[in-house]
Image (cartoon, rainbow over all chains, first blue to last red; front, side, top):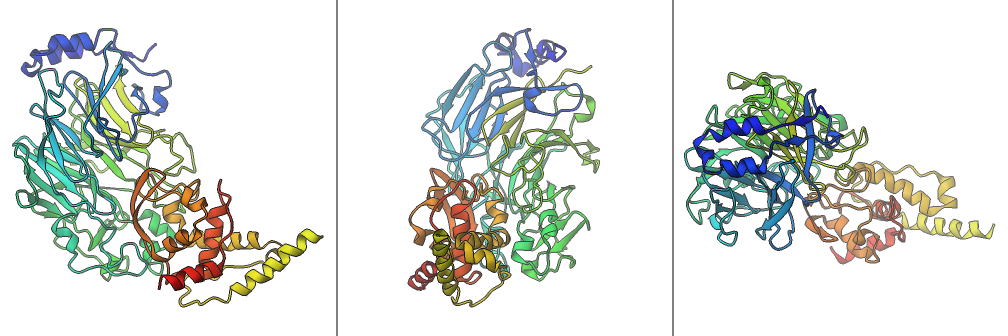
Length: 434
Length: 154
């Protein structure tokens, strides 16, 4: 098998780092020289030459975001109504073949966000954020001892998930999605106009910043770091630039709400899904504007007097790159590993969950894209990196898709992990080319 | 031949119900093929319902009636959609809803009210359509039933 891949040399390098030394022997035991081998069918994925994929685990439920410990264990956050002790699943590979041999669970809350930073596991429900102390083996010491660090976050209808990421200065950034499509008087009602100013923005529609180590924080303790973001699911702290990057889910229903101004084709192709490089105080413009990927302009929303041409958002920032409409970017990861070829280093992977609101036109997405970066900025070109999740060549709908990519994580060896919240498959993508 | 007579009578009865109030009709009037209506009123209602579905429902509930996981409720195979409580279905279309639990799963999106967007006949047609499309098979909804629910919920 050409797809065979050994993680052994990388682990030796990794073991040289001081943070690794305490558990190096464990790591070597876990990832035996037998190595991680791609599935014969690459787990059903289509990948660039030299890459392979395997299914780490299957049927975990609504597997949202995930994170990998230095020892290679995978923590997965499960969304929705979870059984007791099944809100966070830990996958452990005992024999080093890359496949999970033991799944254990903890936490009684559904949610999306999960991350590891400075010896703690952070995880969110749709209203709160908790953290758990990890031991030197990357295991939660006491699952019952969750520290509630953030509470009372706004949760309305739609965009209720609270995804999160952390910087290197002790702060955590949490998305609070707008509980609305376009801040209409009557949400998603044809012809209904926008509320001015949009009252949702006081407590949602942005990214809030909190301390990573303080208990029971809520709005008054945190700060609105960036506003005018309708909903962010995929976000990541770029350690090279020391900056927060987010992927916005653009608004829906331009044709359905304003059929006289927008065609079904406009509805499918507008607005862009957008990546923003955020600074404190930034405003991305929702709900007053949307970003038109063809005109490459911020366009005044029809709820606020727009006609598809009038520009708006003079104070709003521009995206650093725009993607086709409605692809639903649910995962963002800056790749810092050494396993993949050099072009991937410091570039961004984006997991596009796949569209629903392009109907009746064909749906798009359901893949993981790669966005090359140069000098801290996207080069402007992006490519589909991993495809085939839906298992369909055409006619895919959200229900019929076999899998939908959602979360992304990087393993200690540089493997890329992808979660699927349709069937609960965890994929691991490895490079075995020369 | 006898089998044809009953549907024909039903067809005429249904046509009589079509004289329901049409406050606003933003949806294009459904094209009815008289020949079909005369011989098969269910099929005619389904045809009209399909037009309404495509204009007002498909964007969220999808061509396969599967909805969108966690967001928009599915219609195909859904117990409420196939069930006997037609008044509940009619109320949902008239008044919309904010989030719903369907067969143990939560759907969080907002559905706009359609009381001012669709006539009684259009609501009857589209509900008949979703109750008898995909794998669903349930009794038709009449404009009279919609009218009664609309009056009660004024």
